[in-house]
Image (cartoon, rainbow, N blue to C red):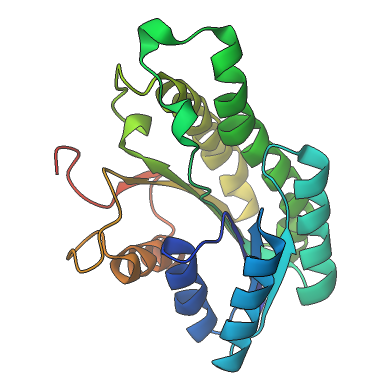
Length: 221
């Protein structure tokens, strides 16, 4: 089996996805800014019988993110599935009338440059495998922009466009690119937005390889 790389691996969705794909036989590469927490979580997964390694990188640092993905490949083997799901900073969510050009630098680095760097680093391995899945996970402003969350609304729209272009361009190579929109918060115990339910949905998207945009729940939920 090959590897899933989870960029933005945290204790909620990232942990659930790591376990869901790990149970299916994937090795798991965990990438986040907090090196100690990421390595501790990798050790926890290893204690559960899964193969996992942690790598530290800030998605706004292209060199660090690329190096982490390269290290994951060297350690675990080719990355077949890339999930890009870091949680946006709160300061990206400013009202549109209070947002200037400088306020958009962070969101664009986070939601556009980061995915571009990640995809460029895993694509050669996917092409060599002859298959792959890229899962872009976004909040509801990816589908409906919100005047009080200008940064994520603008950056998610750009990320959505990039993903859609990849969806069309990479399909002939056997690489499926999909966007998974989670409206509102991830809610433990919720029938559709519990972390385990979301992980199952992402597994289904990977397995079925159909369509670009998928929704975890109704946009007004």
